[in-house]
Image (cartoon, rainbow, N blue to C red):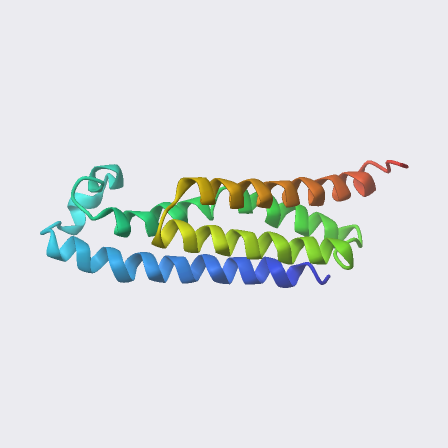
Length: 141
């Protein structure tokens, strides 16, 4: 059940990004004279809010994409009794890579760096999924 630790850590990080997003977005909206109802379509905020404010919101959204696969695979690994050992290390590696991805996107937003971190985290996710598949599908290598 060890892999539940990185699961909870990533969920916690997602909430940190939520706080960071609103701590920057709400003052920026106020400064730009944007009323709450003007933000019904957040896509329209791009030209009215500074990019540095938008980066946090974009990253918050990203934390609801690929990490959802991590959550599902981690739960499968717990259910099949494979949530410790190497898979636990992979789980922490995934979290570290996603946190680094967040920090890069929310601050300097260098796409090449983000892409590298995203790719590495995806390779870790592939490994975790492969390990879950081996057990679930009773594959003997």
